[in-house]
Length: 165
Image 1 (tube, helix red, strand yellow):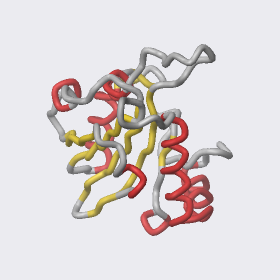
Image 2 (cartoon, helix red, strand yellow; image 1 turned 45 degrees about the horizontal axis):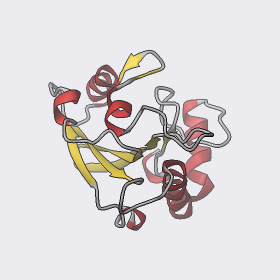
Image 3 (cartoon, rainbow, N blue to C red; image 1 turned 90 degrees about the vertical axis):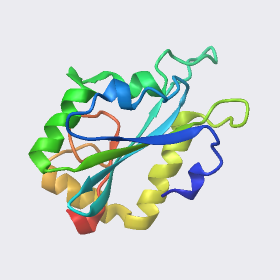
Image 4 (cartoon, rainbow, N blue to C red; image 1 turned 180 degrees about the vertical axis):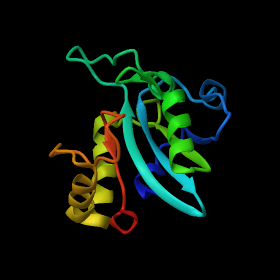
């Protein structure tokens, strides 16, 4: 989906469907700093709905303890990701989420997760422009000026192309 992710050799993806255990389907995801994005598969449509990062560098140059696996399986705003995904699947008649992950800091890559996440957001913005942001904000009634938002659940970045608004 994004050419910018081709350079990250430690990568993969998994599907999450109704009845799946998130911990089980994400068992091969390493707990290293990186980025991930989530694609919603629903009724033959494919929508990019989320871009996020895990692994924030502290002032001392070390990363926090939350890598990709922990981030994908943790609570956000007090809700387990497993529970959130299940509720969205039921509420929106979603067939599955396709979750792609990329390690951005390892022996082969040295991109900060925040940088890589920003690059993907920039590419989305170049494709869909500020209209995607404005339409989604009006539809959802949110007022965060620096984020594309689909839902209040995640505190990171939600995206939605304008033709699907």
